[in-house]
Length: 447
Ligand SMILES: Cc1cc2nc3c(=O)[nH]c(=O)nc-3n(C[C@H](O)[C@H](O)[C@H](O)COP(=O)(O)OP(=O)(O)OC[C@H]3O[C@@H](n4cnc5c(N)ncnc54)[C@H](O)[C@@H]3O)c2cc1C
Image 1 (cartoon, rainbow, N blue to C red):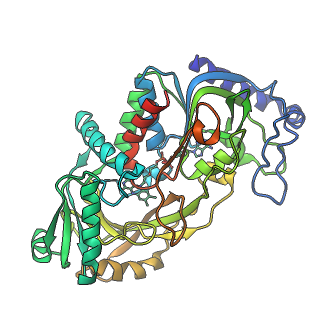
Image 2: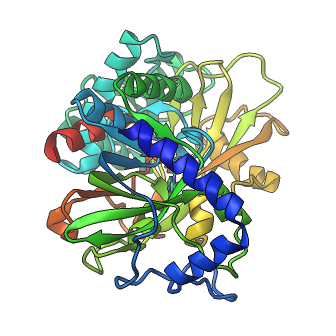
């Protein structure tokens, strides 16, 4: 059935290319309400009265929108339960969004408020991830981490963090005094620390590759270069509007943009990361006012050059800062040392640019000046000139600067009123660690 969908879709796309101008006429007729104004950078939303009769339409059991680590894990979990799954991804391959722009840390689950989704999914996801990585030979290492207080005024905060971790059910946490911590890590400077032995690192690309392979073996179809641009209700069912991503790239905003395929799934998971809120706003039918506001915080990394060996064996984290968990030391599986990510609040981009991942990922070399003093608080021997710009990722946040941190949001019918539609919002860190637990939750709760 899904293979037929894709083949039919491909036929439709090549036919539309052959049609040329005539096709534009048809688009105007069908999608008159979908004109992008010259001055606006977003597409106007579709009208309920619009008819979609001449657009190919397919029924699919489950659609997952977005092939980041969370979407892939969800697709695998649904497929393992015997469901027919189609993953629609706007990029040419999987995992090119936030899932390939992070610290690749398997978090223990320490920082998050008791009983929050972040706490529950991180602890469960970490257990599932270690088990999965061991079973499938995914490169990973349980190297442990130290959360460090670099001055005595930070010790109360360190104790709070410890209590929070214990309440969340993180095993093995213990306070070590400065001398002991500095014996464990001779380059470290601190007055006290929490040792978290369960923290580790993982090769996130190998993880995603393995999850994709497993999902495909269970019959899941991944369609790349395909973007969901909106949706409407047919009766009580959501009908997704899908188009080739290339059409968005070519689209100048002066012509009419129409879907090339309508998908009617029984279950749809909006797992589009940074785009989730903007895509949800383009679904015509769910209750209004339920999509949370989106904020974006870029996190830049600098790598350590001129150093043959890593100065640290474990991950080193300072006390968390507003919007992130501090400029920390991460070591990847190749031994490369990275410092970051910092927190830079950035503006959103319009919806179509978001679907194409047109965010500003640049790392300003001048920012190194701010990194040196931060890092030297716990690594005083950091040499001048040793930091080189690395890469950056953007956190899909639901709370803005100086607001309390928000939890992951998983919205089902009870919130927005549409059966079978699940929106995932604010899946920032620890989303990589939590991915398999989120997938387990969705495949248990919503099937
Ligand atoms: C700087 C940084 C550091 C982090 N460090 C860690 C860490 O160490 N440990 C940890 O556990 N977590 C970490 N995280 C969090 C983790 O990376 C994310 O939670 C996780 O990758 C989110 O995965 P996702 O699948 O939800 O989103 P994404 O990976 O962003 O995937 C979304 C996908 O949807 C696609 N898409 C978008 N719009 C559309 C559309 N309209 N139609 C079709 N497809 C679409 C995108 O192309 C993309 O592939 C970090 C995050 C950041 C930013």
